[in-house]
Length: 98
Image (tube, rainbow, N blue to C red; front, side):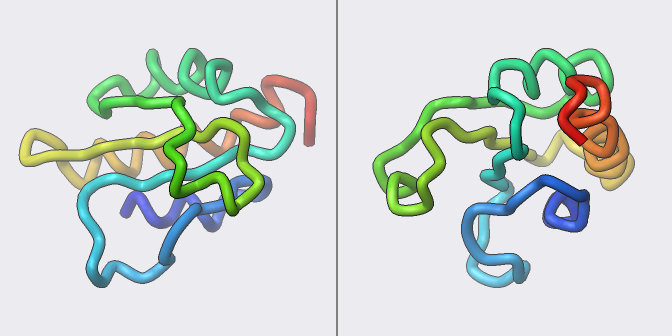
């Protein structure tokens, strides 16, 4: 479900889009919105995910200065992931970068 973030306009998944050889973490960026702003927008709407906005060296080749990473675990449900994707649909509009 988290990979559906890549279906949202303005959101780019960093890494494979297939659910093969993946762990429960999805790195992504949102065009025109700083990752800290993304985190503050998402937190009250989908707070059951761990967030990280640092730029690990493996992502420097993607030209993403900073990224968002949503990490799920055994405590997350499909509904949690769906809530995250639904919240993500409103990020760019909220920050006026549609």
